[in-house]
Each structure stands twice: as C-alpha cells, then as structure tokens.
Image 1: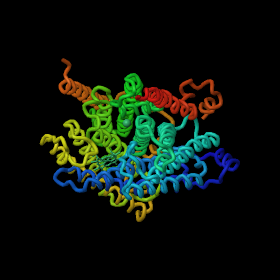
Image 2: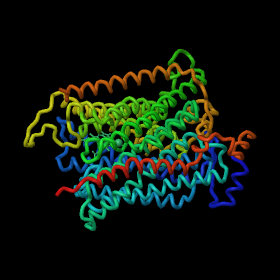
Image 3: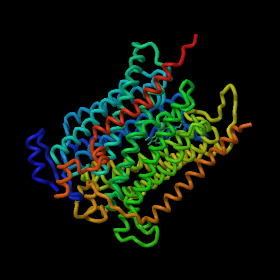
Image 4: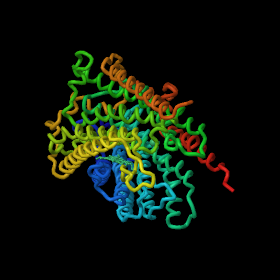
Length: 577
Length: 54
Ligand code: HEM
Ligand SMILES: [Cu+2]
C-alpha cells in the first residue's frame, strides 16, 4: 500500500508525519491524527454521558406516575439534554469521523494537527461554558433558544466558541483532502466513505455559517449592545443551523454504515455511481428541508414553505432511499460472496449479529428508515404537519433519527474505533454484545411512544400533562397517559444501554488489553482481505439481491400506509364541508 | 495501474459527472449556495418585506 511517491512528497511539503501501519487494513495511520481522533471521541462520550443522564431525568419527569423533577429543574435539564447530546456528543464524534475519513482512509497525514488541538480546546471550552450557563439556571431557553427568551451571555458565547472550533476541524478535513491529493496518497477518486464525510463537511460549513450569523447578534443582544432580535428572522436563520446540523448527522452516519459494512462483512458499494449520486443529492437539496420547522409560521409564504419542504426536499429523501437500498444491498452481496447463498435471507440470518459494530449498524439502518424516515416525511408535509406540530410527536420523530439512527450508528462505529484507532480490545465483550440491542430497543420505544403521545395531542416541552394549574383545564385520554408511562420504561432501557456503552468504552480505553492483530477478540473483518475495501474505490455490481428487494418492498408498503393514514386522520380532524 | 495512470493524467477521459464529484470545492460551493439562496435569502426577504403595523 505504501508507495515511495508518498514518502518523497512528504519530505518536500510540510510536517514530517509519523505513521504506523494498521495490521487489519494495511492502511498507514498518522499518529497525530490518531491522537486527535481519540481526544475527540473521548470528549464525545463524556458529553453523551452527561446529556444522556439529563435525558433520563426528563423522561422520568414526563412519566406521570414518577413526575421526578420540579418544573424549573425540568426545563433546565431539558435545555442541558438537547445541547449536550445533539451538539456536543454528536459534533465531537463527527470531528473524529472527519479526521478518520480524511487522514486514515486516504492513507495521508493530517493537515496541521496543531490547529486540530486548538479546535479541540475551543470546542471543550465552549461546551463547558454553555453547560455552566445552563446549570447556573438563567439560561433555560431550550435547545432552540428562541428570542425573546434570553439566556446568559456565556451561554451564547459557549456555543459560538464551540462552533468556531468545529469549523476549524472542518477546515482541517478539507486541507487534508488537498494534501492527500497533492501527495498522491490514493489513486483515482476518494473512497465512498470519505465522500460521505465530505458531504457532511460541506453541510457543516453552511450549518456553522448560519449559526454564526444568528448567534453572534443574539450574544450581543444578551449583553445589551443590540436592542431586539426579530423572532421570525431568528427562527429562519437559526434553523439553517438547527436543521442542517441534522443533515451532517445523516451524511456522517450513512458514511459510517458503509464503513462498518466494509469492515465487518467486507461489503463493497453496489455501484459507486449510484451511491455518490445519492450523496450529491444530499449536498444539493438536503439543507433546504430546514423550512419544515416553520410550516405553521405566519409571515412566510406557502411558496417558500412548499418549495423548500416538498419539491426540493423529496430529491434529498430520494438520496436516503437510495442509501436505504444500497447499504443492505451491498451487505447482501458481500454475504453471498462469503458463502451464505441459501434462500432470500440466509445472508441476513448468518450475519455477524454477535459483533456489536454490525448489530448496531444494521439496527440503526432499519430504525432510521422505518421510524425516523417515515415519520420525518409525514411531519415535513405542510398539511399533515398541522396534526402534530409542537406535540411530542416531534421529539418522537427525531429520537428516531438522531438516537436510533445517528447515535446508535456512532456507538456501533466505536466498537471498530477501539481496536483500529485506540488499539485496544473491547472490554466486557459480553456486555458489549447486548448493548446495541438494549439501546436500540430503548430508543425505538421512546421514539414510538412519544410519537403516539403526540398523535393524541400531548405537547412537547411540557412539565405537567395533567395541566393541573392551567386556567383552561383539559384532560388527556387514558391512552395518552399509558404512552407516557411506556415512554418512561423504554427510557430506562435506553439509559441502561447508554450506561453500558460508556462503561465499555471507558474500560477499554483506560484498561483494555492491547489488540493482538493475529488473535482479535472479534473476527473482523470476516474475510481477511475485505478490510481494505473501506478505503478503495470500486463497485461490486451485483443485481441479484432478493432479500434486499423484499425488505425495501416492506418499507414502501409501510411508508405508504402510514402516509395515507395520516391524511385520513387529517380529514377526520379537519373535515371539508 | 496503467489504467489508473491514464485516467489521472488525461482528465478528458473521465466522465463529466465524475469530474464534478471529484471536485470538493465545487461541491462545497454548490452545497452552500443553494440553501443560502433558496432557504435563507428567500426566507429573509419575505420576512423583511412584511409591512410594519401602524
Ligand atoms: C437515554 C436516552 C434518551 C432519552 C431517555 C431521551 C428522552 C427525551 C425526552 C423525554 C425529551 C423531552 C421531550 C419534551 O418534553 O419535549 C427529549 C428531548 C430531546 N432529546 Fe432526548 N433522549 C435521549 C437521548 C437523546 C439523544 C442521544 C439525543 C441526540 C443525539 C437527544 C436529543 C434530544 C433533543 C434535541 C431534545 C429536545 C430538547 C428541546 O426540546 O429543547 N436525546 N429527550
Ligand atoms: Cu429538521
């Protein structure tokens, strides 16, 4: 793999990087990149622990029989939950993914590790500052921080520092692409996983720019230098960040699905062309969907709403559907190559379900599609959005995307990052084996039960569903109370899965055995030569995929039925006479 | 190897779409401009043109 070319290019330009050779994939790993990947991944896990604990407290408060926290603490903890999990956990991990997909997969050195450490420090300082502001109690503005609600200045400042740090990280990714190309560390096009990471990085630039444009004036407003912030203007620009950042997540976790499929069963994309086109659709159209958060906002035209959430966004949904076909398709093709050719589903039955990286990836794929994806299209349709706007359906939907989808995929990837980058064996392998199932079932449960409760009208971000001290009393149905109880039970399951993940990662990182490539605890990749597929350009080109076609058929039927049911429901709630 | 060399030395042999997808900065430009125009600028202009109540 290593060529003389590379070493020569190295000596001419830039820093003298030190490499080790990966015993599993044959890739060269820049040690400076490796350290940064470890630091960012560790920070991610710490913020997940904090944010996940907050999530459990929120869910226990919304469980009517428990109703744990008093009102003020509930909203404080809810604010902390959103920021720690959706921003800090996910974005630290994404920076690690960007460094991995550029330096490691391209066999290159990382551009300017020094700036990488600066970025890391900015992000840590920002995240800690925002947490301090929230815990001090005068920044209980929820995740969206809509004005005229005002937080303490260091809340906004923390978020700004964090964003600047992340932007530097994204810049290092682009610079590494340039270096790798100049130093010819790879041939032809970049591998698909890196292309997915590139998609994430591009969306990140727009995301962070939107964040800066709106948070800097809001910060100035909180210190008193600006008189007012127009709430509607704020919402439009803020969602350019708030929603687009979810699309970074989607691109990153789809890239990781492909990576995990390559590393665990030796999968190769069915068609580079098709998969890249799907990512290209993301780059062009995915970010426009930000408008779905403003569907009931007066003052903005239906043309703007419908163009951004329908015509353009469905092209991006098409991109997701393509990945939904090609990821399982490439797994099926690889498994058939591995010898599992009986019937339509032997490849799936005999997949490495005991490997938490594979299990987490596949669960993430299925749940992201069936729960997060379908509910997202329903919620993003202007008319049916009216049924559940600002109800618990919304958190139900996005726990299907960012928890069952992104978070589970990142957890799954961690089980490969530990041996490949930390060079540690996964500690407590028995616990690790059940972790994706426990967390996955919990995440699916909270998503579905919050969606159910939302369909019955329960508002999101509400401390007391009995509405005991409301001036206009209202009683929700018994079914709605049941949903919230079940939500609490599954929240406990998800939290248990989260705790196991954190224990396993910390124990492996601090005390895990050094990996011995000749006898890894998990047999991965399943076929010896397959690991290198993750860093290659090349299609498999199989079309005989009966199992995948059946799965996709089931998905479409579920999708259509559910979409239809919601229109039917709308016509009942709001009949045309 | 020789096939790869031919393709990297002679860009005219590479299909147009592949060349687009191989240009990260072109993609970056598209990915930032499209949402800025259709979502942000269009949205902001509509809000800015809402008449002020008297
Ligand atoms: C143990 C796991 C988790 C549980 C039990 C949980 C539970 C909840 C609950 C009950 C709510 C409040 C809904 C409301 O009252 O409006 C909520 C909100 C939220 N959750 Fe989670 N969650 C978990 C993990 C996550 C993760 C991993 C993420 C992101 C990656 C996430 C992102 C959010 C966000 C952004 C909000 C909205 C905050 C706001 O309205 O300002 N959650 N969660
Ligand atoms: Cu959104």
